[in-house]
Length: 282
Image (cartoon, rainbow, N blue to C red):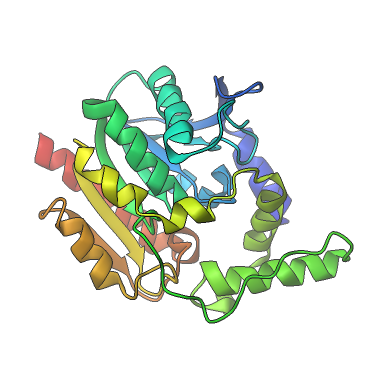
């Protein structure tokens, strides 16, 4: 396998970077490809790298925009205390400045939560919103194991072991799918996370704001997502109370980080969902 840092660096080198207002240093955006605009919003304690196995496949059909959300990755925190409303306000402003025509948006986990709030603000400018393992629906299924905090005094091997263990608890359904690239991404993301999103994720803030979203909704969930309450059918039913005709897909065998663990199936599924939306609006 190619060195994980080289994989991330090569993809980053192909991106066009821009910055929109957020705090003192701004919100960092990356762009690839050509075609209808598609915005990818990563999860909590993450960065654009959550999409490392998806960007090239999606950019073959779309202009892909992948920001680092406020207070995560390279992006600064807003000057106000962070809440879903303040964080999504910075995101919505960045979307308004960066993309001048209607766009599709896909949000993973906390990215789905903030994407829902931003979509409610932006109205018809959001062509569709696809929620991917999104949080903000209320309490989640209790994990049987607790995540481990990495020790600042531990050596590199201990830190890597902790990262693998936590990925196996929360993000992956099958621990054999946790490769060196996933560990590298996780270990780069965690120290740069200044937004602790757990409280937002466990609230019902997304569920409350979704009725205000004008865009058609879609959902993609991993079959074994540990954030489900307690299963994927209940999540689908919650969304159908808001938009009865939504396109809801389940990817078998995958966990929470579905677009990494089952990248090929996810890429094909998202492209199919987006194609269906374009045909429906034609």
